[in-house]
Structure formats: C-alpha cells, structure tokens
Length: 431
View 1: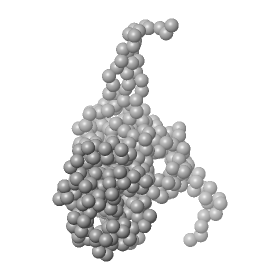
View 2: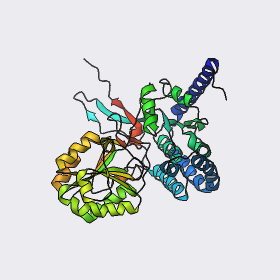
View 3: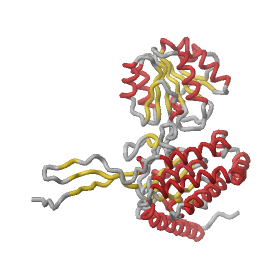
C-alpha cells in the first residue's frame, strides 16, 4: 500500500478535525443538560447499564473475543491481554462498580459550610461539574464503563476514545451505555464512545479548548508523553507507577512476607504493582530468602543490589535503570537499605509519585514515613496494589493522578467536580 501523499494527509487531518469538532459540540450541548440532571435520573441510567452488563454478557464477550484474538495474533504482552479481557469476574466487578456509584451521594450542588461576613453577607462554595471530559485510554475496556459512570454521576459529559486493541469491546460497551442513558431519558451525547482508532483524532481532541475542559489519559508512558506535548486542554495524568514497599527493621516478617507477595503478584500489569522492594539490613537475612522463594515459585525474576545478591542466589545484578523502571511484568528490583532515612531517600529519588508502603510495627517510624514520603498514596502495612478507586470506596476511578492540581491519587466523583462561590445577601452594598 502506498503511503498517503501531502494531499491525502491534509484530507485525513481535516476529517479528524471535523470529527473532533462535532464530538466536542455535541458533548458541550449535552453537558448543559447533564449538569442539572436530577440524581434519580443518573442513578436510573447507571442501574440500567449494570443490568445490561449481565443480560448482554454473551454479546459483550463475543465482541471481546475478537479483540483478544487480534491481541494474541499481534503478540501483545500478557499484562495487556489480561487488562483487555472481559472475563465473568471483570464484568461482575464493573457491574458492582456501577451499582456502587449509583448509590453514592450526588456531589453536584453540595455546599460547603458558609461564613457570615461582618455585613451579614453569607459566603460559601458549591460543587459543580468540570463540564466536558475527554478520556483517552489503552487496552482497558473496563475504563469505558468506569469512566462513563463516574462522569455521568458527577454531572459531566464525556468523550471516550479507547485504543485500537479494544475496539470491538468498547463499541459493544458503548451500546450498553447508550441504552442506559435512553432508559433514563438523558441525552445520548452525554457519553460518546468514539467509533474510530484514527490517531489524528486524538491530536485534534486535545486542542479543543472551546469544547473540552479536561483530558484524562490512561495508558502507557508513550501515550501520556505524547499528549502532554500536544495538548492545549489541561491534562489530569500520571506517567507511570514505580511503586515501592519498604520492610522496616520493626516489621512483623510474616505480615511483611504476605504484603510483599500480594503487592507484586496480585496482578503484574496494574500501575499499583510493587516494582522495587526495599528491606532494612537488620531483617534482610531472615526475610529475603523466604520472599525470594515465594516470588520465584510464581515466576518472578529478581534483580538486586550487592547485599541482596549475597543473601539470595541467582539474583541478577540490579542496574540504575532497574530502580527507575515500571516493569508491569514479573520482574522485581530489590535493595537492602541501612535505615528508614535511606529508604525515604531512595523513594524520593526514583519514585514516580504514585503509591508507596511501609511495613512496620513501630508507630513513630510509620507516621514519619507516611508524612515524609511525597507520593499521591502512602500506606502503612498494606500492599500497594490497593491503589484503586474501588478499593478506596470511590465506586471506581477515572484514573490515578500524580498531579498536584486539580486532584491527586485515585480520582473519583469529587475529583471530577470543581466549585463556584455562592454568596447570599439582603441588599448589602459595598461602601
């Protein structure tokens, strides 16, 4: 096939721009309706979507099978295939998330405690939707449902553009969403699942400042780096999840073993997976051989510092790149540290600011770690794989943000709203 010439390229670009503008216009129009929709209507739509996920399960899995076949044919990594699969369990989790979000309090219109000024004027804040949210994501059809649900509940219109590897799955899920909106009498354009894999469209969407208020990318570092360089619309993002677990000198080693095992092997391909294990030198001799045996039995490749190599046989020497890498694979970097100070220093240098955890029975050390480690989530005696909006009680998450503005960590309903100032008076005048 010949490559497109200059005229063809211009036609492709213009077509993508026209499609992006149309999506944006329709989303903006729908947002004016959905921002004022009653919670009863939004909850009805979400419950209808939940019912259809179960009643249409066979059709959804048939569509998903086409994507899985293509993924295996294209030799996608096992972690991506896992993310792509609409198993019975995945559909049940999505259904539970929809019902949980439907039952949650509506954040829209909630007012903060007001302050009465000396002149009697009442000043407060009211929660309002962000407006139109564009979500660009890869390999995860569950994002289609989670994002639609969270945006709808928080009164936002959304444009969902999934990756080509989940094309058939996302189209089928888009029909579930449209049916739910129709059942509730809400505008179908409140959630638009883009029916194209055109990369040029993504480049156009991220520049539509008149029609889209926020872009949320979910995918690999390459996608997010590209969008960060091209976007004119503000991004809510994280680049990667280089997460750490630190086993302190005062750790319960049985508890530490189970936490480290779960943090690494719960699922290799999620952004909350532990990628580096830090172990205090005082417990390294007792702890590392045991955890190494468990992880090797589960197929995990171990890469370690010199002290780790002295305690465990057949460990690959760790390099600088290992401390910096989000593997998303059965690979783990291990470093023995002299103190909690060195553990915090290592995390400060190499962490992506996603999720870190300390395992210790020393409350003073735990509190210090939680205070001084500057990541979006910091745990005590928990595996990092809890980094998930559903586990936080948010119903689901739109993504995990390592930004400082406007939201941080798993972004749920409140993270998809902003506020406006609301003032009430009785004829006061400014003198």
